Length: 262
Image: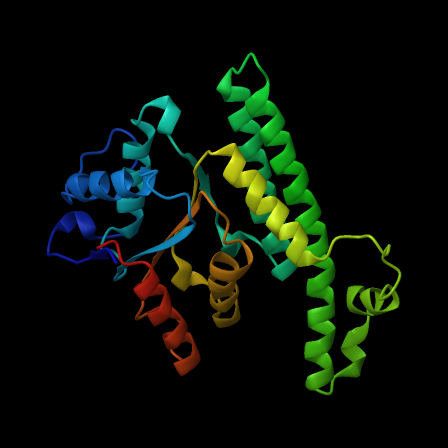
């Protein structure tokens, strides 16, 4: 896992990340190039979660910026699409899912428009992926409502059944008999993204700014729910500043192991 080490440089004071035209006083350009090259490697189309760990002010956001710059220099045919996802601007779990998947849908649409494919093959594959993602999002929202109700039941809080949770309970059994289950919808989405053959890199900066339950939700989302082919999540965080319960430390340790670049 890439680690950013603090130095005594005055350039590290403050919380401002590098911007276009700034000088790389931190000397991260070579590291950014290595990471960008690894992220763009098409040897495998599997999804991946990569963590960039460092203390506050050590330059994590600047490193992410430089990685994006290096990715932008790649030839068009292998250049990934960057999605900057900022979860602290989003509210509850459903909003988190919808916002991420909405950003992914827009990115897929951009792939089709940028391809300039006269045969229409890329456009057709992109439309298929967007349709599959939309169906999966809807099904996931329904499932999420039921999970919330189940959680309230175990917590002996029946008054919390109001709203979408109660609506979801009313709708149990009303689905069409031939309606695909969640696993089937995800498999169709996985196939469509693999067929599209375009790589997407989702950056999530400052994960440590989130509340404890939100950190868990982000890790669950990136590793279990939205673990799609050709979708790579690039997370930055300060492990010391992250929620410090045993459960959260275990989650971050697992993330670090899976994020090893070699």
